[in-house]
Amino acid sequence: MALIKCEDCGKEVSDKAQQCPNCGAPIASLKKDVMIRFPIWKGQMMNNKCYVYDKKTGEEIASGKQGETVVFDCSEPRDIYVVVKGSFGKPEAKVNPGDRYDVGYRGFGKIYLSKVDTIAGTANSDGLDVSVGVFKGF
Ligand SMILES: [Zn+2]
Image (cartoon, rainbow, N blue to C red; front, top):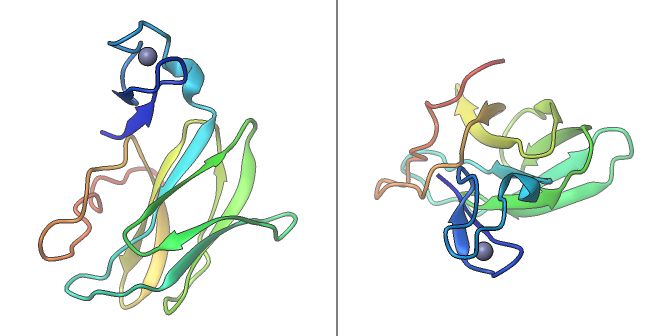
């Protein structure tokens, strides 16, 4: 379950909530963004930079480090691809407003994108991305 900020009162609210428990503002209307979580390779602390690019224009949409989640505005479907420095592959997806994606590892150092219902909390104490495994589709 990911937490987002209510646009009306600024309190943190579950992105699954229908409305803000604090002020009652509808939350569904806030989902005009996309969240993508970058992966951590089990047992290693890697601080490689990770990027989200627009497939059509090549524009960099967002960037962060491994284990971080990036959020970017998305008012209409757009084609993106993801790059993790030091890893193989440039997985692509057509993302829609409100979509959440995890980047995971398949095989040695090969990354993939998977759509998830929510971004899980944080990596566990082993550095293992606990949200990997809840992917579906693709
Ligand atoms: Zn509120």
